[in-house]
Image (cartoon, rainbow, N blue to C red):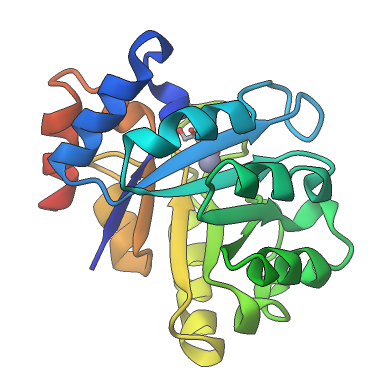
Length: 216
Ligand code: DX5
Ligand code: ZN
C-alpha cells in the first residue's frame, strides 16, 4: 500500500483548512508539515500553531518534518499540539537515539531523515527503532525542486536495509515527487510519498492530483 502525504508547504495558506479537507476527501492518508528554522535550511516556515489549527479539522495522521538545527527543543511542543509522527534529521544529531526514544516514550511515531549527501548506510544503527525512514530526494529548504537523479539507487539501498533490519518501517521520499517521479520512487521501494507542488499547485487541482497519484 502506497500512502500519499501532501506537504502543506505548497498550499495556499489563505485557505489551508479547505485545501487540507480537499486532499483528505480525495484520498490522502497523511499530512506533511515542513518546519524550517532559517538555520538548518535557508528558509523559515511554520511552528506548532499550524498543527494546533489543523488538528481539529482533519482525521489524517499529521507528520512533522523538523528541518531545524535544534530538534530537541521542538519535539514536545509539536506533540502537545497534536503531531502523530515526528521526523528529525540525522545531520544535527551526533546520536539520534535519545531523541527518537523521547518521541516513542510520548506514545508517538518516530522518523529519521537524511539529506541527499549522507550515505544511506547511516540509517543502519537506527532502523530497529524507527517507524519511518525519510530519504530526501532534494536538498531540503524549498518546495518545487527537481527529484535528484541519484535518488532511485538510494531508495533501493534503503529498502534492502529496511527488509533486513525492520520490515515494518515505512520508507518515505520527499522532494520533487509528482505523477512522473512517483512510480520511479515506488519501483525503487518507497511506500510513503510526500508531495507538495505536485498536489497543491497541480494545474487540474488538488482532487485530480491526489487521485492521479493514488492510481499510479
Ligand atoms: C523540502 C520539504 C518538502 C517539500 C516538498 O524542503 O521537506 O516536504 O515541501 O515539496 P515538493 O513536493 O514541491 O518538492
Ligand atoms: Zn518535508
